[in-house]
Amino acid sequence: MRLERVRTNGTFSIDGEDFDVENNIWLLGDDHEVLVIDAAHTATPIIEAVGDRTVVGIFCTHGHNDHINAAGDLARRTGAPTLLHPADEMLWEIVYPDSRPDRALAHGDELTVAGAKLRVLHTPGHSPGGVCLYSPADHAVFGGDTLFRGGPGATGRSYSDFPTIIESIQAKLLGLPGETVVHTGHGDDTTIADEAPHLEEWIARGH
Image (cartoon, one colour):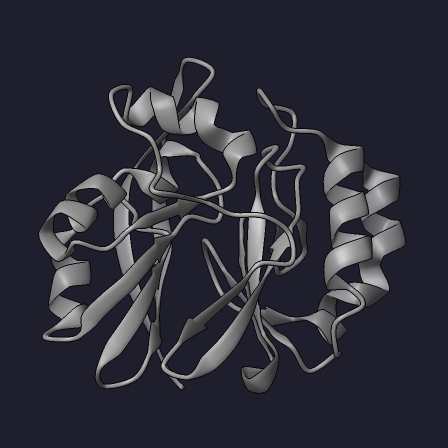
């Protein structure tokens, strides 16, 4: 399996505030086809990284604007479907009031790209429809903003909830093999083994 990261910069907007952010966009596939995970900010560098490969889907780990604001343009330019958990459609509508995602994701769904099977894990908390994408064969999980190096994704904003994200991480992620690499929506990778020992610390600090 071929994995590439594209980084883009832009604005994350929520609750009337704007934040400058750098996002990770993950391309998973082979020399012929690719799945794009989190089309952030601008489609052009994603198109350049894809090259002449077929984009089989645009997987949205959640509906915050900085993770989907290039999805519409990318879909138009490649013909690929957009995939989002329906619990985040209210966030999608802020960016795309006149359209809906092409496909609804659900916990346990299987996607296939370049012959590899990937499993959808519903991990609410950062947002109600937050999902991760697990690749058992590659010992990798694409975590969006659910789990980072050093702890859970941010809560305390609209539609987010700290106890919920803790439950999601504990039930859906920390049980994965320790060597599983967590490819995050922002910043550097981590592993399940590196993060699992710190669960009680996160609960105690409350974020």
